[in-house]
Amino acid sequence: MGLRTANDYKASLQDNRVIYYKGEQVKDVTTHPALRVAVEHASIDYRMAEDPRYRDLAVVEDPETGELISRYFYLPRNSDDLIKRSQLIETATRLGRTLVVLIKEIGTDALYALHMLAHYMDDHEGTDYLSRVKAFYRHCADNDLAVAVAQTDVKGDRSLAPTAQEHPDYYVRIVDERPDGIVVRGAKIHTSVLTNSNEVIVLPTRNMSEADKDYAVAFAVPANTPGLKMICSPYGAPREGSFDHPITSQHKMTETLTVFDDVFVPRERVFLQKEWQYAGVLAKTFVEFHRFTAISYKLPLTDALAGAAQLIADYNGLTRAGHIREKITRLIAYTQTLRALTQQAALDCRIAEEDIAVPSPLLVNIAKLHFAENYHKMVSYVQDIAGGILVTGPSEEDFLNPETRPLVEKYLGGKAGVSARDRVQVLNMISDLTASDFGGYQEVLAIHAEGSIEAEKMTIHREFDFRGHLELAKYIAGLDHATDALGL
Image 1: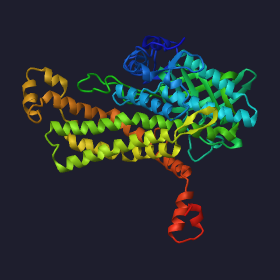
Image 2: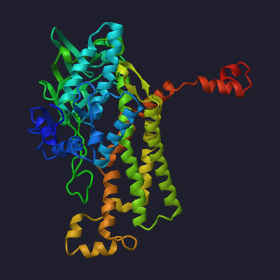
Image 3: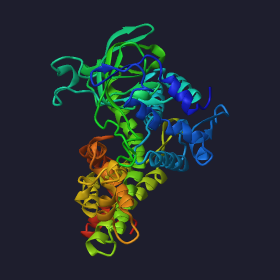
Image 4: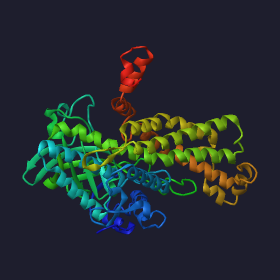
């Protein structure tokens, strides 16, 4: 089919998928008062492919078919491919006013990981997974599909393995095996964008033991597959009015509790079936790509914090105040450090199975840790500079009411030349960004999305090569045998 238009994408979602929102079943995700905002937000991806300003970034020629495909489906072969992918993610997120689109980013992260693991398993275990992965990849790329990923199991008692839980369905598992496929049962949580995706890839979330082999499963199914049910979180429901809510009135991403109620998966769509030794490997390989996606889409958010702080400081006449400049300087250092680490992670890539370029896990996780550990502090700087009016200011209706308009215009102006309306509009943007449901959503994502802070620390320690540093320490300490190792 090739590239789709935004209208093609929207029409593809009218397929009787089972979604519940606030206790009621959703008849049509494209017309639902809250969920249609998520559909429009996701359409950014398809509109970029049609827009001459972004087409060269969003679209690329498929080396296998010669047809034009979304760059997201282009398998990265080198640093330049990774940098362009990062730029595409960043640009789409900027158009989303700091909210990532994610309908192809996360799905292709999983497809890259599946290519690599399937190649390895076919070589070492005699499986035939790679042909299945490639066929599914072609299906997604050729039809320009939106692809979600369900990875995080609901887990139950976090201290227990899957088979030791109070009931066996806290992790997604295989409950039946047939010649033509498998049947799975269980639930995943924190599943982003599935309500408005065409397909979902399901991955394991952790290492497994042999006793847990039924839970070592990876597969893909359409979003309207019988037995697949989505319970959508109402958190961050869209707000009305672009003046008062410039982000949340126009942009939303959905999260679901995703239930697999005895879902049948055809054999050709099964990518891991009880090979328990590889469950953790697949989870880790996916994360290597997905955290690179994460630090790419965090860039517009950190840039927005720095820009918003400078803008409101200017409107308030405070750009020369020392403590304001100090906070803005820290915001600049925060965002530019993240940008430098993101680019260097692409430059320091390695070429893995299927000749796929993998960004440096060490630098990716350092970047993610830098973002996560400092995000709340950066938000506090912006809020400090803006002031308490973030949550006490008037509404757009007060500017429209002839009785209140003269009052708010008289008393809420900024420095000379800055109107009250302009100042309040900037304050509303900062409020929406940092002090709304959306702001809370971003603060939780900073800690938990794409892996916890502790997971990032563990990866950094595991990936770091201490050898040269140890030899240098030994040399400085006067341990003579270190001299040869350092070439001195």
